[in-house]
Length: 203
Image (tube, rainbow, N blue to C red; front, side):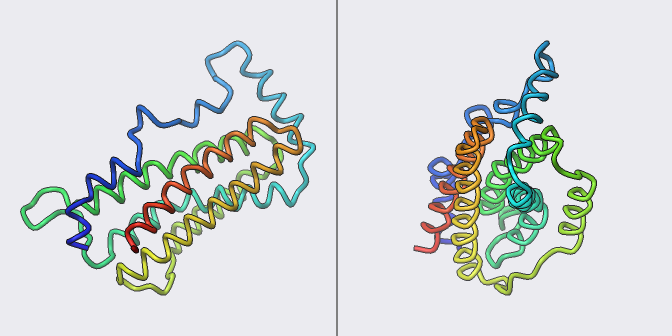
């Protein structure tokens, strides 16, 4: 971990993107300041009727997974070789990576949550209760504080989320839901970029 940490700035520059240069949820959602805002929401609600319950269940699952970020961040900050500060009192490189990574991931939950809300197809209160339970309960993935096991896990986990978001994009595109398809495809691209980063750490 100490050896890898020497290159952490290179990893951040190679695999992560600063907020000003990466997409943000509002790039995909109806503009609430626009005169056409209500019409755009009506269009989303109308086209969402064409997608079946199984699709929305999968999309809700993706959303809740993305919104459990406080759990992922606290779990990774506990891995051996990672702490909030370095020995000299400055910022620990790994903490810098984890915060930058989770800030990128945070956009996924934001945009999916808002989109599902606008679709009118999902009981949002039940989704919110489930998300709160997931964060409050925490998780034990069985890797302990071992950095090798944890990075193997994140490598597979990022690949799994890539596959899920990519499949959502394919189904949405077939149903003529082009905005949701584009959004999910771009989220999948983020997940693949993160997968490549964690794979490199393992190598």
